[in-house]
Image (cartoon, rainbow, N blue to C red; front, side):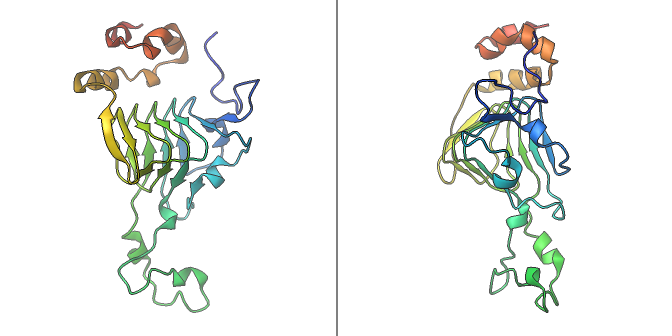
Length: 213
């Protein structure tokens, strides 16, 4: 056997609260999800991309990428660019969106200037319960975001961050091991190759991973 089907919605027969996000993202043009990335929702809901990913509108144009083998825990919120407000006037209130004359004179470029861009969650990232990811953040491969953290800026590969705003506590491995892991990029391997080498992947021997075939 070569692991579960990455395109099924609920891969665990005994627990339907865990969903593979790639299956849930089908038909969405503003989201890309890698194999086996999952969301664990004990409320058994199926609206992650509407309830947990907020302010994400097609007309805004920002894109959400969730890498393969990501583990996203209960209550995580990913905020996208559609929630931004222009702040260089006397008020931040979005008068223009209500129309009826309030849209007159509004320059869309003013709003575009406050956009933070695409949000990218790299491969093999673990995001703890009720963490919040702000717009435009890039989270590197293998990073860990602690429960309740508020991530306001980019997170380096294999960093552990916590707090509000989230700050780096430490790196999971030294610089040499991190570079070698990024070079191996096991998350891009075929499922069969991952299955053959799963002990090396979940172990702590980088040399075994590098020698894997």
